[in-house]
Length: 188
Image (cartoon, rainbow, N blue to C red; front, side, top):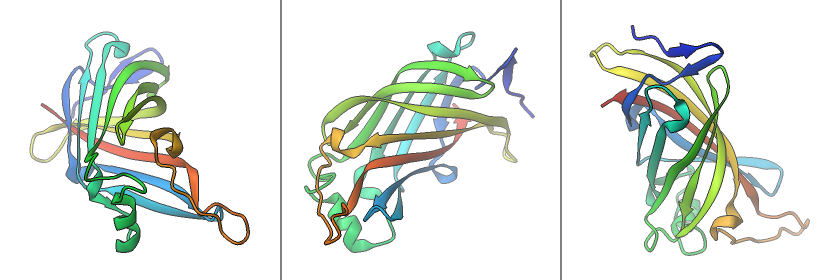
């Protein structure tokens, strides 16, 4: 079993290049509906890479890419609407991407990760929390690391501005979107 690299008060990904295993990972989101209920969805096609630095985690780099058309909220009509020009415009903008701009250790295995998120051709810097959950060897001899990523974005910052108002005055779709990513990555 490979142990996480640790320093006093710091847990980090062992140095090297890591590829996200999409079979054992998920890229999901949560958004309010009518401001009273939560709709959850995920993307089934994505890829990612982490290049963990040897000595200083702030010199590490992560990137990811999501196929927008792979969105799945459990409702075909809603998914088709999300793929349309009203929302993601998946035909014109088939991918969302993320590239880190800085990584800062917070405490233990917790990191603040900032990066450029591009959605629908619009790039904005966002900040999320990433937690290194552990590392080890799987039954097939692959070295793995687990990372959870949590954050929140304003969808309107990325041109996802479609909206309707209910008779009660409540917005149909919340503007704040929770990002819920769970990664299992394999050493390259």
